[in-house]
Image (cartoon, rainbow, N blue to C red):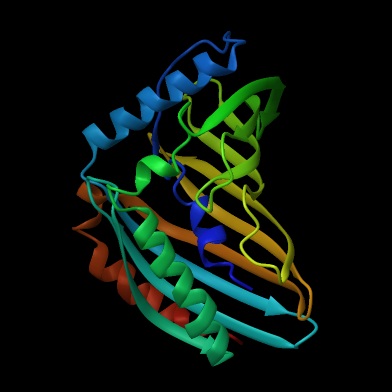
Length: 251
């Protein structure tokens, strides 16, 4: 059940995108990705990072185990992430051996020296246009993503890119490299939503099929995400609200 790197790899994708006005007329996947890379660079230039909260929920039906973790996340201008645990509840082993390990793995993956290995760039992936689609009334480009090597930081799957803002809307796939003999398969879906001028993650759902313990579901909910420049004035009230909400974790 080495899910830590696997869960972390898709957090290395752009977690905050800047909106822009554009005509959805590009049909070449590489052009779309180039636009997305530019928008990601614009985001990093305009913001000083971002901050927010996450709730991790772990469930294993065969073991009848449940665990939850509430954390704060702060991402610096260089993309590096720092996590603080606000509260935890449920199965202690899952909290310390899986959920906290996921935080450590994502923090490691976000470091400037590691990020280039996992980003959606031509160095790491090949891209192929599949079709046009619409998500919540917004046009998107649907692109197949193929890793150029078996690597714990990469994935194989499909992405949806907003045709106006060139921001990630949805990511779906599996790891490029199976993390363990004991793991049969892993599937994840990572979704984003626009708030103001920015795109933030809203949910991540992953299912790990293991040889002995069966299926394990890990769901991550993201809330109160904002550019770091907008967080300072209300971070304390947001934090206190999260603490109050944490009292209901597991109930």
